[in-house]
Amino acid sequence: MPLELQHLTARFARALGSGTYRAEAAIVNYYRGNSNMGPHVDDSEDDEESPVVSISLGRSAVFLLGTTSRADPPIPVLLRHGDVMMLSGPARLCVHGVAGILPR
Image: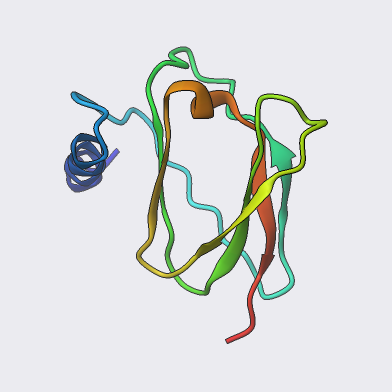
């Protein structure tokens, strides 16, 4: 992982109250205009205590944040270019996804 990205995510994590943080992986999700990402939980990492830091780039999208139960309705959150979201603590294992990309 590029050192610059490690430093950037560490700064975000500190600013958001997560203390010491060293990112070990990065994923880029590219969405076309009619894309979405179904509900899922990021639970495949060895360390589920470390936060997930997400940096939004490009077009705005509706992010859905649920709870640890798929039965609970998610809360829609507008994400714009440059927004940073961190899932940590109890939210780390919450169901989440992308409902859709907004038109320009």
